[in-house]
Amino acid sequence: MIRPAVAADRAALYEICLLTGDAGDDASGLYVDPGLLGEVWVGPYLALEPDLAFVGDDGGAAVGYVLGAADTAAFEQACEESWWPARRARYPDAPSSGELTPDEELHRWIHHPPPTPAALLAEYPGHLHIDLLPRAQGLGLGRRLIDTLLGVLRQRGVAGVHLGVDAANHRAIGFYEHLGFTRLGPDHDGSDGYLYGLHL
Image (cartoon, rainbow, N blue to C red; front, side):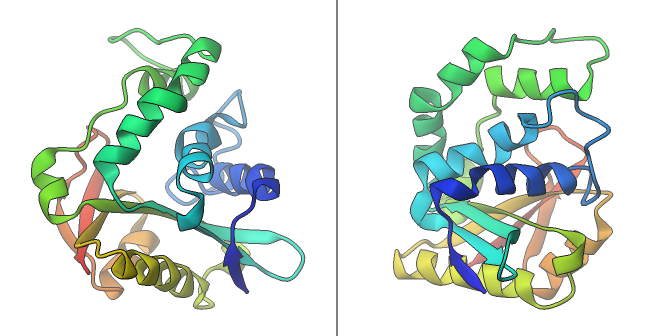
């Protein structure tokens, strides 16, 4: 079933984020702090865009989620004002050069999140993230989660959405392209990934 996310889902969604955080595979072995990925990719949405957070539930536990923002520029500003400051106090900034650990790379992201280019937002002002545990994949749940979120965004008059995907995550790339997302180019954040967009 698909249902709105609630505050009590936070720990489960953080865990899903970690278990799918290595190009769709388990990232548990990469991070010293198991909650760090969730602090970047889940927490802000639950706190700032709760009406655009949906959970795939197998009847006993969360097995996936989709999170989004209708206005990416406003969301990024809200993060600056009310989400990142507490995390910046908790996680030290990382050096701007040299080899960084996966934890340090996210510390640097927390302190210096790359703004989404205005040219992209003019056409695709919204964005989304979706993750499903392996046991929930291939069952149509991912499509239903995205359709649920996109339905709400269409009701709000959002013109388009974008997302980033790791270049190594071939299953996700195929999934997005099957849903009609178009590859726009390399991801704007400098990572080894692609940017996809969909007009609504």
